[in-house]
Image (cartoon, rainbow, N blue to C red):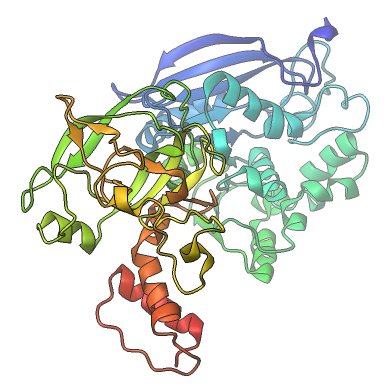
Length: 532
């Protein structure tokens, strides 16, 4: 039977139970059993999935909860789950509750509450008889996250945080400190802060790792040698905790954090002890703490990273929403339009962010001599490439781009692209001014099949648009698209005014009238140029 356990994640997953919890509109609490490659045993974990899970293409963030000595996967759910689940529902996050150790008749154990089954200490044992099964560090940090992503689509793209109580608080702190790139935030209830100096830790490290010294890499206080990526580390501690002095010792962790400039917030809760009553009293604040940070990361991800699957739309017309300018001096109208696939030398993009420029208003007011109606305005966008036409090589689906109303063909025969004095490439200027693509046709049609004109070769006031390949400025995916959109016109106009038009020199005095996107960019460019 051991052949079932490979060095990769086991794939047999069984839902042992499923129960609706929290409010009427809340989610479900599951107990899940699977074969573990790390522990070479069956493992059971608890899983709360909020009601919004699976309702969109966006990944569901999750919070890992690591329990303390003698606990299994059910303790937290039974004793503090009602409050935690309700708050997780409000935050739109999943809760993951792994067991504290491997279990089974063949798993080594001792007659002691603080070692063996129920006391895995979240380390990878190196000593007999524990090293075969007690691989809880790998289980929590590698195997379980991978399983959750594959089977439940939660915690993807690093959208996971971690917390825990007592031994689990120790596990949360050390795991987060050791692998900061895998966790968005960390908190703990009554954690064992300096286990190499207390009886629980000394016993565990000697038995599992061979020595107390070997446990230093699993000691939160020892690990805190420099400031971390975490903006804060939240800890709640009861003042009447019977283990406060002998086993937990939060002040030593706080002092270590202070030395390296790491913010740690410790709430000393008057009158509370070490029990689950203490956890239940304050668990909502911890779930909210993590939920806020997970949502912030998800929001940044929306603007930065593509999670879209364009395979079904490529080569096909796309129906989407767009704001149509039907006539001059009339309000824009939201309509469903059809965007045709790109032709040779063209790129179809999904517009993630769009900005409004004075030039759009200028055209809508009927002052633009090249203004054509009906059209789709907009020329400042942050976009993701959905598909490309024949012959396109500079970008591919999934790339992030800024549409440029002044493209650059970059041909050596183009005197404009070759000149350092201008970038007014005329390659597609004539057709662009007529509201059509380089081949003289449009890619937009309204619900009646009638053509809609393009605007400045961009038309970013649509969920999808088609632009020429030479109008695509490929950018790093690290840049948020709602910020990148402003480089399509406003920011570059301000920078160009300072560097190219006025040629501001070091020590110059600069006056700026108005602080919109252009004005702010002028200030930034003048500062870079050395203006006084």
